[in-house]
Amino acid sequence: MIEGEELGEAYRVLIPISKKTASQPVIEIAASLIDSHGGELIALGVVNVPPERSYSYGTMQAFGYRRLLKKLTTSELIKDVSVRSIVKVGRDTSHEIMKTAEEEKCNLIVLGWDGVHERRYFGKGLGELIDDREQKHNIVIVKPGRLRKCHNVLVPMRGGIHASLALDIAGSICRRFDAKLTIMHIFDSGEVDSAKEGQRFVDTMVREEDRQNVKLVDVASDNIAATLIKEGENYDFIIVGSSILDSDRRELGPVPKALARKSKATVMIVKSREPDPSSLFEPYRIEEFPDWKREAEELPEFVDKWFAENTFDRSEFEPVEELVELKKKKGLTISLGLPALNEEKTVGKVIEVIKGSLMDDHQLLDEMVLIDSCSTDKTPQIAESLGVPVVQHSDTLPAHGSFHGKGEALWKSLYVLNGDIIVWIDTDIRNITPEFVYGLVGPILHNPQIQYVKGFYHRPLTVNGGLEKTGGGRVTELTARPLINLFFPALSGLVQPLSGEYAGTRGLLEQLVFYTGYGVEISLLIDILHKFGLPVIGQVDLEQRIHRNQSLESLSKMSFAIIQATMESLEQRHKVKLLQQINRRMNLIRREDKNFHLLSEEIYDQKRPPMLMIPEYQEKFITRVRGEKEKPLK
Image (cartoon, rainbow, N blue to C red; front, side, top):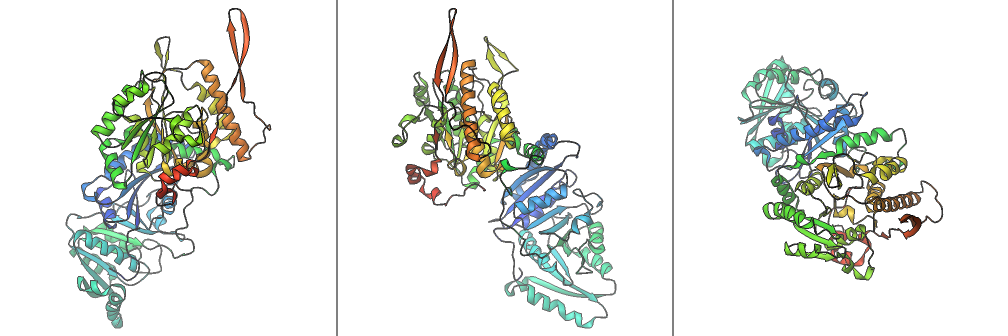
């Protein structure tokens, strides 16, 4: 519509939504500013937590906000627009809005307003929010009117810094609603020479091929404000600068306020960003420095905020059909890897439930493979009988040898599986449901920043033939959590860091070191934290997991391996100086009759390099290695 910047394919519009300003028409208007073939609408909810409370108190409110945003952004009228929802938890709503706009590289912020109340608006007065001399983004305030009837769009014009943005937006509105545009040049009655400025403005700002669709009206008036309000009664949509009577004013002027209050039309008040080319849209970095190096006094609040914003509930990602559509829209594939060792009692049910729901009924999963670790029971045969391919991890990538352990199976499964998103769940789950898979996938599909998701749940254990509601996670609580809080406190918000249910993007997983045994879960988290930062990690409540319990001796071995992996990570990060050689052998106490003796057992995880370094993997996934697939944020 105008010469210069257009609302193009890379255009991103941020629309903050509060429970007071939630409005479907405002969302539809914001969506109309994005061409259907490109651009993105980001709906933002902000949970305000009082200073005397920790951020984690906002976790449940964040759940509610995500449900509200989902409801508001699923209108049939915006189905052709790419829409994404984000919920932030903070102390200052307006700060979170501006911070999100910068992080997401947004071009425009759209704020809904009822045209009346302005004292407390997204944490500030409306005028205070607009009067920002460091404003880095274009801002639009929308007072909804008769949107269903939008035939005539009016742009009052007196020049000034907001004219270009107003015409940009007017062009998008006219295209969306097939409406006619009128540019009204208003000038003082005594300024005869000003009458010619309107045509000069149109000739300068409107492309020649579009001028036939634009009507220019010159209006002389001694009372510009009153004239504009009266003339505006003949239009369905009015787009006005935030300070039409004074092009140098930054705050919201009296004429736009009066229009919004008195007009039955939809009124859009636009304010261009303050020019500062050197600081606009700097390359986005998750953090200025790695999370594990944060100052001690900053870390608790940082982790608390992460917990509130990146903790999800599996029910947020229902129904499954919506995830399937989102997967298709993004052009992604999803693979499920099932690591198994002698799980004949449970593996059949796990496969039947997941395959039946997420492959047969709904095509969320594109691939399911059992990664077997030389089971001696019927685990492989059961999987094959149910139509699931079985791969022995010892036979995969034979040139690189083979080690015992779950981590080895996970590492090799990256080569076996073909999906853009990889999901792993254990095969000893007795109460398996589809939520164990789609709950893990949901945060990754909905939020491009999140690229690794851990599941957490209540863990009742089978003890003496019955279920104990308390208990479970003994290694987590007695070994992993103390270690994490001591040495890697940025990870202390993870409810169950050792859970066996997690998912990640291939672009992230292929860059990680894998420990071959029990140390794999904690070492992956530490490696992700070090390379990509805490914000790429999410966690989801899967409610409850029932599984067999292990003996104390097995748990002791697990703890020993986890401590070793943590100590090695500390050494590599140069945070502490340890002994030259950590002891790899563990003495187990054995009692036979009345005699005691020691049984010495070597417990040591090997380390596998990032799969991206393996030649066979490079050959199979050559397009990804060459960068044709998007890599995770750094």
